[in-house]
Length: 338
Ligand code: SAM
Ligand code: SF4
Ligand code: SF4
Image (cartoon, rainbow, N blue to C red; front, side, top):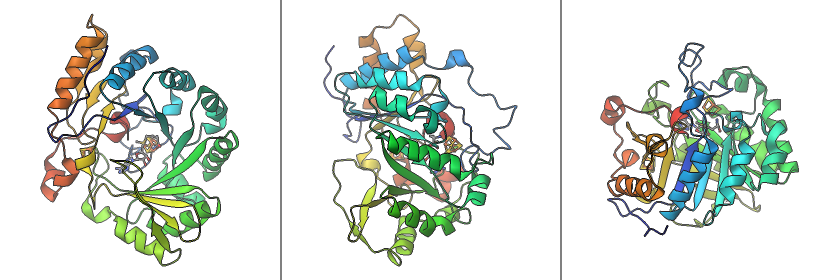
């Protein structure tokens, strides 16, 4: 099977695929899965609705034929999915895959880092929004101690995985943690990336006033630890990268709100139940599971994906205003996969 590479309506190729492997999570981060909504009555996806590893592998092969080079596994909490290292191994064997990433809250790295490394994984992104234990316990909504995450990070590094930390900054929630986080991870030589708080989903009560912009974060850091810019290393690189002067340690900014980057967005997403989304802010997905479980051939599925991508016009963050924020129906982050 050989397809020509595909482009959307803004001439953006398809290069990256984010696959959510579960909509469940052991945390209830207040800005992502608030505990009062994602409670014991919340209808998570039943097991038989989730794509199997074989189905994910089949889709990944099709997407690679269409131009995908990088895959990121996410969720929910991806390490809650049983035998995840087996999936990593299957995906890494696909010809044309250059890189696999994993985004996790880090707690289960203690258990799985060695198997992930053995499976061929090279790096993990650990999400961590505070270094102060009391605050961290509050944010994760489950009272989990920072020690569990730090232990996960340590285990991953001992096993030889590269670790980057992602911190979402929300005004009034954890902006006071910017310098403590920088100090801690600079000392350890670990890259820290700041993510602007986004209006994903409709359960986190987002508004513009809660966003701490890249400029604000940059100024706070620069006043204590001077930074110098690093050139982007490839087209479509999302993070704006800097290093602390006199070191190789990096700090990055994902400026989804203040400096959107839709014009170079080459990312597709597949939800845990196999819906294809062409934007993090899409309201509707295309049902790939139904195709996979019908007698459609790989050629037919590739054709369907090509059509979806060719029709893609998404540029939500470029167009974000008070109005779009209010009026758009949106999928939850834990479902679509961050
Ligand atoms: N559970 C894993 C984790 O937390 O790393 C993977 C899934 S989580 C949805 C992926 C990333 O999305 C995390 O770094 C999280 O902080 C981020 N995220 C969730 N809601 C967000 C929001 N409203 N704005 C910005 N980032 C958000
Ligand atoms: Fe779970 Fe990640 Fe969402 Fe936190 S950000 S609730 S760890 S999916
Ligand atoms: Fe890509 Fe949509 Fe985010 Fe723009 S808003 S960068 S199109 S996912």
